[in-house]
Image (cartoon, rainbow, N blue to C red; front, side, top):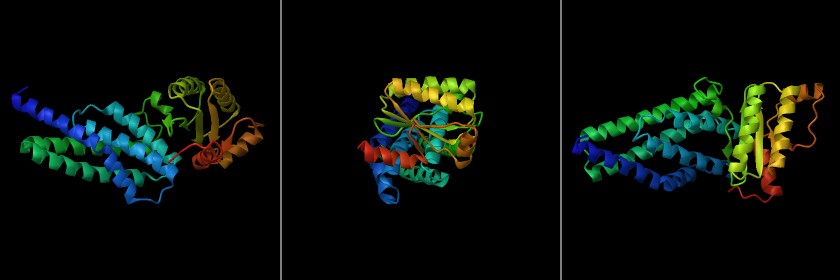
Length: 274
């Protein structure tokens, strides 16, 4: 590597650090632009925006962020569905931060006297990263069962607060996936120090006696680990099927949506979500 190349590489690292350092300011400015969301949604968006900014910053240094990108896209797609936010909201945020970070890169490049060639390459890498993020997010949101997303990511646990996380389930639950669900919920729930795990079923296509039995086992195991499981998102047609099959859920808190579950926890458990 030539001295110029080493010099430019160091400048790239400076750009990444500057972007991450400005993350809180960028997030707050974006939050101030739209106050239409409730506090519960805003706290999730702030965390999501922070992850997105760091991912875009890292894309400046490495073209090989495929796995990180897929993980982020998977959790983002499911999170936005559970918060009842459209894909357009995420895309608008990506475009917003593309512009803001682009301005930062331009300002820093001028101050650092970066060569025109290196500046052009830097912008190309950055915009390529944004484009890939938009593509992956769109794919994950529209096709959650895409084969490009690994099976490990099919059971994403999204932490909302220090004690609350969401486990959004999408698609069919077979015996293998039920085993993964048990292992991942217990290991991640304990590792994250959770008190509550909200299992959202709005994306589950079928709930039969086998699926219900597996869910009951997961809930029981979580209880032994000191974690209260809460079920949300049981669609009307699924509820009717469960009743016809004689499946009765009495010992597990259930709510129609993620929003109502979070509001309930906020009111009854005095959990701060703002």
